[in-house]
Length: 511
Image (tube, rainbow, N blue to C red; front, side):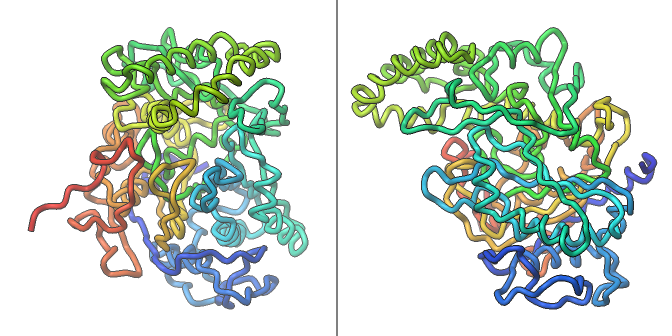
């Protein structure tokens, strides 16, 4: 482990590279490069079809000036100052779902494997074969991981490295359980839940205590990722603010985040910071929102949102969830189905417009969510400052690096049901917060409207080395994307989630 001085210098590098190229992915595993780059391993094949992701990843590493003296030669090793032989490198993609439930492009939701392949190649070169590379994430509980592996052909990358080098690259689903929705009953009933092995290295509880962004919150009527609200509240009360963190993640000497460029209903954007939800093995420790509207001290819905039929639906739903599903018993699940079925068949069709609007905003899906941003802020603290035992330290405990997959992004009803946005970009840098600020700006958003960004910029407990965001410097293969932090352009102009429309977009100065 490097000294604080060395890591301070590392995190203080606020350069962010933006490479813009083609807007599609190579679909042929194992996602070989489409030309014989000088540094490309001669053991690997060449794809007969263009691979924009490999070109993009290579492009951002060049733009960052990594190992500049060897560029264009077989010795070019761009990640050698990020990764040291013997390191454990954890590649953390965004694998939230295995399907787009609205029939859209799955790769507007999840990281494409061709981006991961390029990152793996350069990480392996930096290791020189000595060390570990692990691909790991904690998808949403209804993600069918086997289906995900089949649709992404991600195992083809592991198989390639095993055949060519005898080097194992495990792909880890860090969850303890999953469930599959059946028919139209879109509920995580107990009989559909399947146990999973979880993180083979185990998990540890990290308590942020008074250093948590929730320390200032009085109302603890929280809702997490599952029906058992008591579990969520228990871990965020009496001065405790606890997170169940993957030991695979904490074991990393280098954490490479490979998220998707997309909007998010609760925190504005899904980039590096929000992607850290995938480092948590029990997501019910994560506060997603506070029940009620702002008039009642909550942020589940906007002010004055619940009226008439909507208020009745929400109250009935909350009663059934708390009374029948929170206990996670088969009997409660059966009773719930008996109560839900008449509603689904006979009442729901007459309330379609009301229920559609509720679903869009329910769960704190708007810019006034005052809970989820605190969770994101806390996860950034843990990812940088928790040591391998889960103990928070005063200095950064691992290097981080970022490669954002924006070749196809997600806009509109994100993060789970977005419309595809063919942006053709790959974004990379050293400092997760700095890269997120630059990426949000590239999307056409005002990063100062993201509360988790503002909390981390001037955090009194932890230093994220971005107190002067004006020093974030973007470099690009496109002149118009160079130094975007000092431009009035709206750039990609992503469409926000409906709950953020009119709030997060950059306000252009009149000409």
